[in-house]
Length: 318
Image (tube, rainbow, N blue to C red; front, top):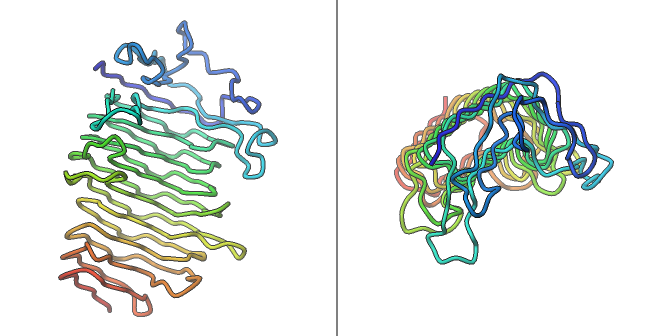
């Protein structure tokens, strides 16, 4: 598998288009249709290993679409751009699905993404190093991660205004366990106003059943998110199921939610120094430790409500 290294830096959106999002791309200094650092290894079904980026010097990159076009009721006009994705599995093939992952380094910084369904999608990564930092999103989901294997993904100091999820992670969609990956979501600020359902962060591993446990560590720290509004609460502040090593630290979460923080299928998690300044629309607690949690250490405020369904978890209050 060819290794790529691509860096995108920008201040404003460089792509302006109608509903098909086929507008002008930044000058890459290269021929063909790849554009500056655009990576879609799954574009060629016959030779996915040959598909590659043609990176140039850092350029202004983003996506702005006409929100009066398709998906106008939710303010979304195109699916996504840019994206860093390997060849996705064939859903009709027997497990394990054939996968052609993408490798290498990928950076998207100081860019603006407006009117897209998925701000910066990442899929089928293997041995990749990804940095998404100081970007601005107005999208349905700001960051979407699928099947990161032996990879590091850092989502740092971004701002978003979304109507579904700030960050969505779905591991093991290809039928293979995630091994040794690390995902960090830190220092981001955002607003989640649900169009139908909405979460600050949603993490599931495995997304599809697997007999092999995943091995991804997740750190969610120092984020400031406003969730839901008076007309519709967010589904949850954070929902994390299946992280091998979990840290939820120093987040400030406000707004209106159905469920606060949901944690399950993890051992030895750490949750502390968070401010749950939201209103819960119902009987759900601020924090729920599910039946398959164990040996977690949790520090909460005096008025925070906690339901502990796990084993050998410890909850501390001041």
